[in-house]
Length: 134
Image (cartoon, rainbow, N blue to C red):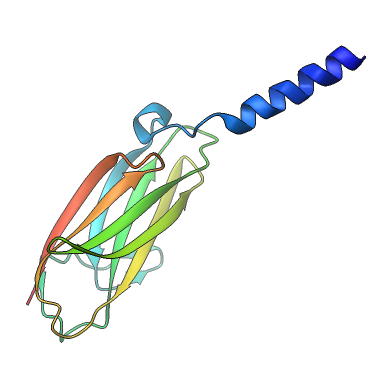
């Protein structure tokens, strides 16, 4: 009986120390990525390519994924203004078809080339979306 208990404890400890799978290993794929001015009923209403910083208070980076059944992991949105990191958001991915987004409040005068990088739970770059703010 003690050997079974030891086995179960050892198996539990091993399970807890296993590193999370990367998106490639876990089969997560991004099927839609958009920077948008608004999310309505869980979907982006537009796709920002160029925008004036004085015309919006916030922007959203929307990500739609597909993954194997039972997926429970995270992705990260990293917002850049030029080469300066201005935001980082860890977001859950908890199903076969999943939608998530991050919100970035915009300050007047934040002009330049922007991008949002999407990283998997291991920090591997999955996708990038770029836009320009005037």
